[in-house]
Image (cartoon, rainbow, N blue to C red):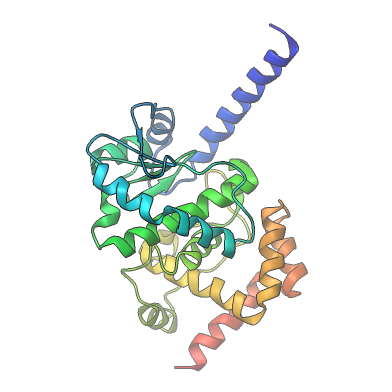
Length: 275
């Protein structure tokens, strides 16, 4: 074995170890489930005739056609609002059933990204427009992961990743909770508290704050929207810095000249004073 082969093998092992550690941080999924899902072959997925970036299982042809019809615009939306192009080709894997999706993702949700982006037929339960928002939400996650890699992406706080994805997708992942409901929860003292980073094993999730995922996503989206509203050009600089690998808290402080806690308290004040 030559040196190049040795280096490639070592890098592959390191990447696999990092991934297995990273999947510990995925909400509601055990390491075993997530690891098994990530290692499953997708060779039987078939490329859509109109857009070969959309791969589907036999039986998911209709779903794949719909995904193909709005994939390009969803990619454009993510690249525009996250200020950079995807750094690798985008592929979307459409599963033929709820059970199949769970096998490939490791959890019974509607969509998700491990090393690949998988969609369950469940994204269409509320119509095509909601399905498009789910796709856009997951593309936001994929985009960030492509910029940073798994290691650095996992360390970003969950509220930020989900808030950004929900904001970029115009509510994708939070369609069961309105802004009015989120405001009512905040005024009642039922809200998450943002953190600057997460760990590989322990991280702040919706359940830590007594919130359902949709409520957590909506509140997180509202805070992201607030950061954009008070300084849109600043938010662009901040996000680009994060995408370049700068520490989250450092990038935030450099942009807004305030700590996360202060920005959050100002956001709460804005919500409460309008009541």
